[in-house]
Amino acid sequence: MDLSANGEPVIVQDETKVDVGIDLQPGSLTLTQNGQDFEVYHALVEFVAVHKEPWTVEKVKFSAKGLDGKSVGVTVDLLNEACNGPRAGIPGAIWKVVALAATSAGDVGITYATPDARPM
Image (cartoon, rainbow, N blue to C red):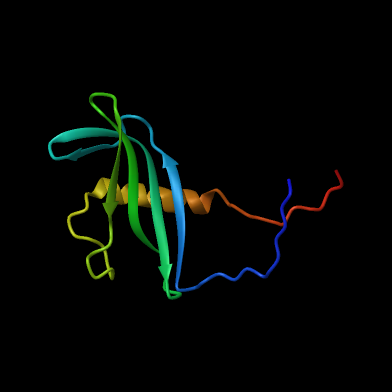
């Protein structure tokens, strides 16, 4: 691979995002939108920290299948219009998905170390 890089990367602290994807057991969550049922099989939960504030959840992007077997995406915004708290009327099952994602991110114990330079 012909690649070069230089510089000293710095994180912008105004807004940091972490997305956590979780696979859900088929049949464990059904979303109903406009009278149509969708069986969820995956959720991507987006967490955000703004201006060094504590982490909060911003939205969940669900991958689901309709009764016709076609895959669809359903996005649920979890912050209210002022972005200072949770949106009213979010079903409890969606908050359980958020809790599962938050727990799994911490439980996995993700650590990282720069790989050793190994001669090829």
